Length: 468
Image (cartoon, rainbow, N blue to C red; front, side, top):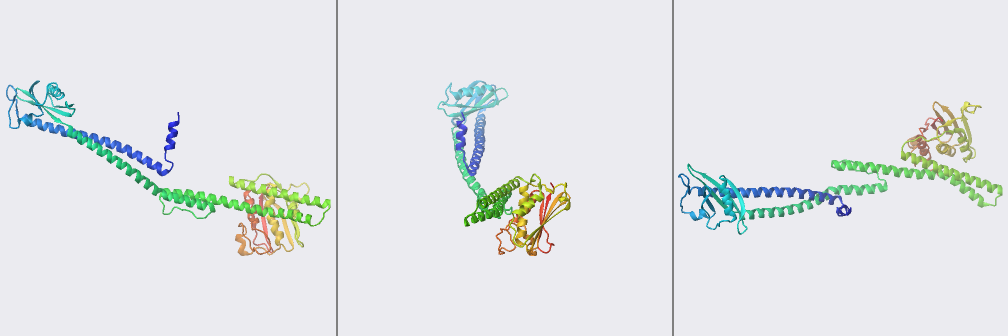
């Protein structure tokens, strides 16, 4: 039952240019059909009026030979009698006075002339002659003082019909030529109009593949192409953002996983270096298991944050005790020789029965925020790293300070930019992603990570998080 619509869908052009050309062709065909019908109807009517005018002219000439002034109608003789009588019927009332020599009683033209004469008024009719030629007849009444006559003139319509047929054929040929030109010109015009769209599509595909910063803008474009360019620019911006987030996530994962992987490699190297006791092997397994759990936590935390950022701003759920997380991080960090750690807290926090110092973030997220700050502090400290945690109105503040060389003034503005390092040749294997990751994660939960440029000596970073 649905074969016809399915066949029509298969036959429909697949390209926009083909569809627009088909629409233009269909519209032009409908319009030309209407115009052709109207034109030929008007032409046929005009030819019929010409024939009627010719018949009235003949009737007027014949009327000069008919005398209706007396009691009886008389037909006067004239020099051109034969020419005038060739297609003329003259009636006195309903009585036939003269008829064409070739007309026979009972023929269609004669019967039509009788009917027109009987009406007694001006009227016209078209009939077929015995040889199937169309004949047009018109009756012209003549009113005298005491007598009334009717002159019926006839005209062969074959030349007029031939003209009408020629006009119809010519109009059909013209329609076919116009339709062909319409289709060709529409395809060319649409193809030319769509050429910038094809070019923009190719450029957008190339730019999206490499995350290019080039954009179309809306200059020197028609309004429609300008809107298309704006839409493509928006899509390209989104694609570039996605690519940048993907690169950022890859860098952050590699940065965060480097430390637990290093611990696993070191334990395996030590295990292969010499025979180890059962206790040492058990300790090695514990270290490797802890590193693996840390890696899993890191992956879960960063992937969850990436999904939440893709879905929109969100606040990480849960509350976490700050001091246990700090103790665990400080215990697991590799502290350089000669560097001591000082942990300072609000005295009310350590008091028995006092509420715990809690931040409104998940434990894994708090670790990921603090870990880069602690690693950097121990990496650059000369003698001491100071970590302080305290309550402030509606929030928790954690400071991480060291007595190292600090941050140069020229690099302060780039400190939290991903992949930027003040001195890439300082002997450390950092990728410049830790501080940017810490700030991004903190901001994701309504917090902040900032640098204190006035702290001397060394560097101090401050983490502000919502209170739990």
